[in-house]
Amino acid sequence: MAIVVEEERKTNWVTIIAVVTVLAIIFIGGYYLFFKNPELIEVVAPDRLQQLNELSQAKFDPNAVVDSPVFKALRDYTSPLVLPQAGRANPFQPQ
Image (cartoon, rainbow, N blue to C red):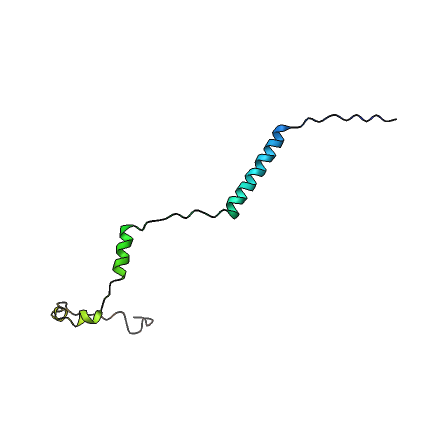
């Protein structure tokens, strides 16, 4: 007749608490990642952006500028550019 001796195993509370904690972290992380709607943050536009918005709505008529007497009174005081001849007629011909 065989004698079977089984030792009574003690429950390891540290392992149970660690497993429960890891599972809780996984479930809470999954909830916040997949199911929780993020809170919307209200952002007030900076003054510079509001000024750019006002400027972009301004109307500009180029014909009114070109036809104005002030624009027609402008004179060109620049001298014409003289372009020198660049290079040779045939750059591959030896000198």
